[in-house]
Amino acid sequence: MKLDEAINGVRGAEADLARRLRTVGERHAAEQDVYHLGHTLAKQSAEHVRRLDPFAERYGARTGEIDAESPGLLESVRHKGAELLGRSTLSGSLLLHDLRELYLAAQETEIAWVMLIQSAQAVRDADLLAAAGPCHAETETCAKWARSRIKELAPQVYAAG
Image 1: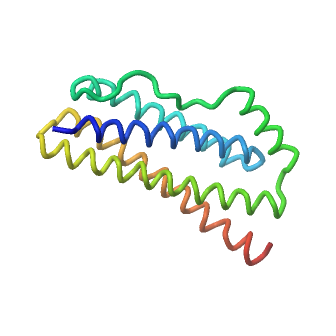
Image 2: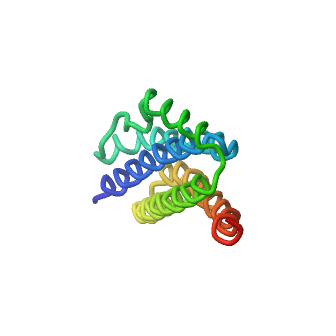
């Protein structure tokens, strides 16, 4: 049984998503929804990693903290840069690019959850299924948020910009 690989895949994808969410939030601090929701969703992704800890131990996957935090100094620099840049044509293009990358990372994380859920069903692990289901749904919501912001922003950047 290689459930450890599926768990490691989800843990790594969620940690990466958390870092990206925090980075995008800081980089685009002038966009209040991106800043606040980015940090909220980053905390949610970091919590998903923690929820897998008991199953990581059970199936021999890596345990312990996965660095989902970005360094404080780097975060401050990104935030200050966002304040200086403000809202401009350049910042809109950069935000659109960052949201696209964020969406792809969320989709990668979502499919990692699907693979883990399917594997948990195969081994009939009801506890893992109960833990994975809500995390999967929250990750889907994260991807939907990024996609809706892309849909909103793309016409502003490309057609009206």
